[in-house]
Length: 128
Ligand SMILES: [Zn+2]
Image (cartoon, rainbow, N blue to C red):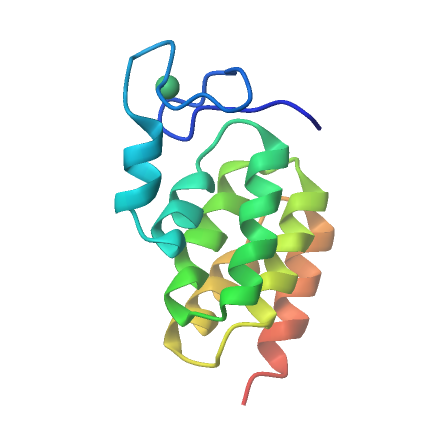
């Protein structure tokens, strides 16, 4: 859990790196100029599961409805990762109601993992 990854190219880098040793991009500047929410959305595409999981939990706390689509895409991208799929569902459940949330749950009600599918359908059925 103590690995540190470049938020731009996802390579493993030493803790505290200000620029990426792989591509030379200025990480500090990117983090300064990119809004936190956008960085969380970007982190959903990170190939390292602990980074994605951190982003999923943080997006749940942000409570912005537009996170629902990218969260559902993240779960769809990793069909065998049930733990992540359930975390995505919990995060989506905590977002404000609206079409984004409904569409995301509808998408996940067709997820390849049975547990994710069932839970998505349940959450969908209680949406007002
Ligand atoms: Zn990099």
